[in-house]
Image (cartoon, rainbow, N blue to C red; front, side):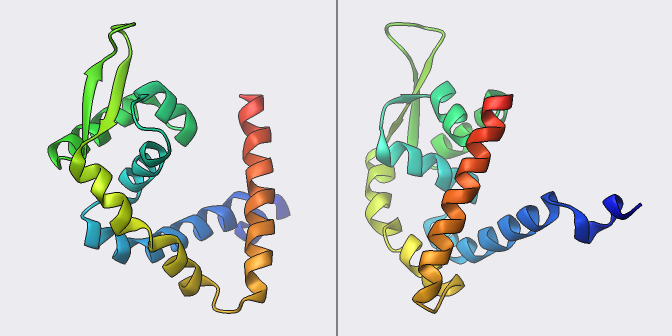
Length: 146
């Protein structure tokens, strides 16, 4: 039963790496007063403000029912506002508040700090980018199946 050994699983190293990388993010996010999932939502909104909750959920590969409590907490923090779309009242549009927009400048250092924390050698940058691109190809493939 070699296939059932933890060391032979594809999912475990991906899971472990994800948890450990998120742990590296946490001190930076604590300073902003947000969680990692909230940070992901903010990244989406900093790229495209005024986007539907469904579109955010799609980009983050999350179920919309997972999004509702997350977005309510973000609204309570004063980072976002949720409003029904004027064109289609079934859609909820998420927009940044001034506080949420300002947070972008405060968060701008996080990717560079994280890179320095997990890859102090410059030669590793190319490897990390190649690995990220390969993982993204894998994600795209798996999304297309489902």
